[in-house]
Length: 372
Ligand SMILES: *Cc1c(COP(=O)(O)O)cnc(C)c1O
Image (cartoon, rainbow, N blue to C red; front, side, top):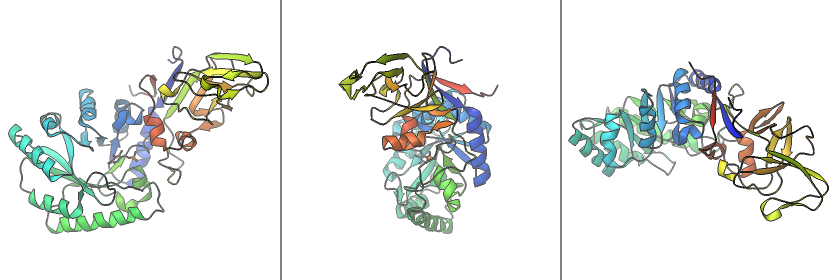
């Protein structure tokens, strides 16, 4: 299946199914599969399907157009758009049965107007800012908004939610503070009889590390994929990473001492050195920074010289058996060596999310264990 590719991604859908089952069992809460940004680079449709097969009941996206893509592909579960939708898209949202997020009263009014004109209700979830400082009404304002819109017909308020800033640092203390604000808000909502059907707060790390944040639904992205949200918030060991990034060695030659390697000659050979080329570069999402490694012949092999757009040079002296066509693993397992997205994130000074979201469209996605 992969013979014709010089580099490709392999995504094992059984692992996603298994991770979703683990989330359902450990949280005892329905799961929203968050598949924005093309399923964090894994392929939104394939991830959404696998998650649904395993029992996820919602899909979460950042943008309406991402949601419509899933609808066009036949995903018929409940969908929530978590980000901003311009009011002139309300008809699209209604026609495709997509729920939108509301976090500003002016925008909500525009939505209501549009929905009223369409003669149909728009389903919305109200977002409350309990301390994230991003999208969301302050609790007071959300309370007033929800109290005032109980009998507005154009907006069907189906849910209310918040989002945590530091759930992936379980010791930080701020998630407890956000939860306290949210709980107080929910109590007040309850007391005026305005609590919507679905309350949600937790992302992956929230769902795993803060049981009190599970409410009626958990919104999980990174954990479904089997990737640690952060070094401080590792997944339980039963979770398995679904994605591997592989390539085939495309060149091997011995260069004499004092030979410059790649743009800028940032690396100069010391002795006779065996230099290989991996057909992967920064245009694929492999960062142009020093200190990278890949796996060849079951060993960690250092990248030498600057990463180019489509190619990366490696030193092959420790793996003399490697030849053109040999498998190279950039992310994943080879023999008993593993390079995880989390390890690469540490090497690049970023987070695991950015590593997989940066995997370019041009990398073919090959799915293992697709359902029949
Ligand atoms: C992206 C996102 C999530 C999913 O976060 P993970 O850490 O990947 O589980 C949940 N909720 C909101 C609002 C998001 O933007």
